[in-house]
Length: 586
Image (cartoon, rainbow, N blue to C red):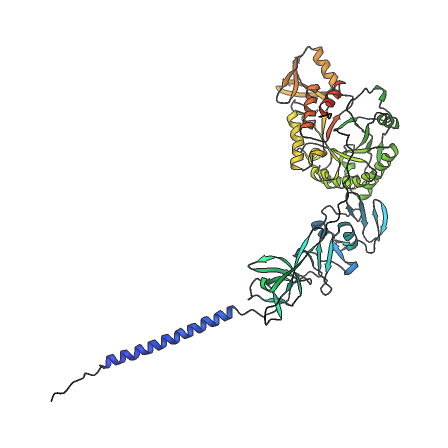
């Protein structure tokens, strides 16, 4: 009988099988551990942070917020005694609100009112009439604080103040706030307002169902929210339900002042140059068809205290009114920069000038005031604007038209740069561009008093860059020309000039038998001649140039034309201007 032999596994194979089993077990255990870690980490990632931290107001004792933005200075007081820093009001509500340290006054101007608040005083003045305040303007640690009552009255702002923290929220007319309410999910009693748009961020506050919060935007799927107590943070969109939109209504706008305008036509003004009282011989003035406004140079700044020189002539007034002319008396600073600085420096001296002008206007039955400040330091730019801002509402109260004379943009500080044309254009009824002196008496080179392209560019630049509407702009034109003399002295050309009336220029042309030629570059007739080794040049003001200037007014639809000055013109010039500007029936 045969026996069957079954070989035994070798020791090496038995060991290999055991190690394989162990590796499989270890791999399974590792996979289980890894899965547990993944589950744990996922759980951790979705576990909201429950740590609470206090909200910090950057060390400000009584914070002020505007549209969720914290202001750098603190408010003062509670309720009716609340005060806001003047700088905050200027930044967010009225940039023209002014504090004048010289007179310890805050000056507020509107279209029809000038209000003055003196620090520490309970009496304020509106259009120079007193009224009582419950709380005064105060200066604390060099910060000017405004009481809330006049801000509510004059600006229509809305104030929300938290009773517990004193935090102030300010809204101005037209501002809107989207509100929401807290809506906790199932098994939740509160929602969290966090420091960042993530559930891992710390918590500033917990809100219960229905508690209100302001919404200022979104970030990464979270709302930027704020509580009335000032806390500003983030809430999940799913935890907030939009509720109301709160908007501060716009107050009905006051009826804007509508300045006088000639019926169906343009303003046609001429300046009457007056050097002494009673020196205007009206009997020698001929007809001026189309003219509707005269501006006699009657009032001038006398000294730094704001006293004025008065050259007004009642006989001239009667003459003007008999002919149906409006009278807009000119007020100049005497072209003296030093007394101008002193007179503009304080509310008291500015108001002293204003009161005199308004008294003169009533006494002489004026219809307007034309402001002509020239040769002014650049440092007085804002003060001049403030003077006009204070004068205009009071002048309008008397039915007066306020106009101001300006130069073209650019140039020197004291000739042009001191004029804030944009701000002035928002205040005055008319702005008159003195469209002459492109080349002036002592100009280093001979040239036109006002080339047509230069004058038109001057108007267009103010309309475009200073945003003064064409309906307010009046083009000033010259009734004079200059006779230029060019003489070679020591190898160099010496240039001099003298001003001529229109008739004086025509006399030179006739006496010398000259034939004017049209200069395309300037848009004017031009002559030149030599005499005794001197070359004379003249860019002529005549019916050709004046018709072209009036056409600029018509083409740009400006408010009108103004001429410097009456008496320099030839009689036919009035008919030329009238012919261009008059409204013809269709």
